[in-house]
Image 1 (cartoon, rainbow, N blue to C red):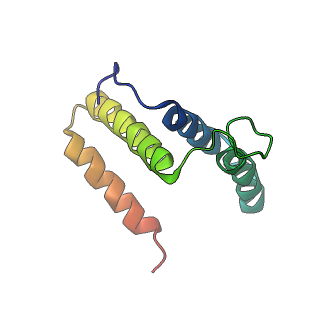
Image 2 (cartoon, one colour):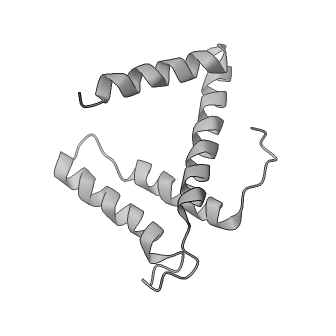
Length: 104
């Protein structure tokens, strides 16, 4: 993904909410506190961009998935460049992490 790519406005809104959810997490907080903070961050997806609960301008599932793909792609590409490895290696590491933390 190039840095000059464009995504729909509601996709960008969803991406910002997802980034807020990432920032909401703190290693110094309890799991319960982190869950609560994430719930607050993600409320913007169900309350709409205005945050007033009206649902106006609410991102759809495709906006959220698209935003997640854009964010992961950007981060993976930058990590691959920084580590001087192929993008596929970064994705393989991420797949391994997902397997390690998945409930069985």
